[in-house]
Structure formats: structure tokens, C-alpha cells
Length: 116
Image (cartoon, rainbow, N blue to C red; front, side):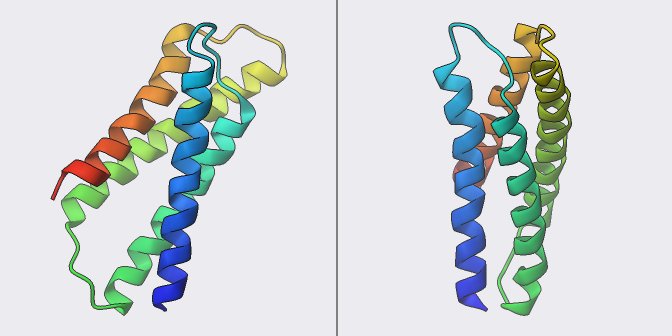
């Protein structure tokens, strides 16, 4: 079970890297790339799986922190979905939308690492 949990953590970090990395690369011309939505979906799925594994592994968890992270991740996923649909249709993606996706994902990473 620990191996499954650790694989989920690994994939969760990859999802965050996909969102934030693309956001940083495209900082001069902000947009939302479809891979950012893929990263957001990966983060949501792995986060839910990890939350389900916590009781099975008898781990202590701060469910308030996890609830806040889940809410932010859901917002990121919705915004990334909207932005990626616009990107695929060759419609303009607002700078605010692009920065909201990257900034909120970065906020989630900060909450994960800094909130004890």
C-alpha cells in the first residue's frame, strides 16, 4: 500500500510541474495549454486517491488543509479546462485566466509544502 501511495505522490508532483512549468515557460505570452488541464486532472485524481489511502495506511492527516487544497485544485481544473478549450479553438485566452491557472497551482504547492 505504501508503494501505491508513493507512486500517487510522484504523479501528483508531475501534475503540478505540468501546470506551473508551462505557466512559467509561457509567462511572456500567457495562455492555457491543454497539457495544463491534463496536469490539473492528474492532480485531482491522484489527490483523491491519496486522501482515500490515508485511513488505510493509518496516517495522520490535516483534513482542513486537504479540503482547501482540493477546492483550489478543483478551481484550477475548471479554469484549465476553459482555457484549454479556448486554446484548441484558437480563441484568445485572457492573461487573467492563464495567470489564475498557474498562480493557483503554485499556491497549492505552497500550501502542500509550507502548511504543517
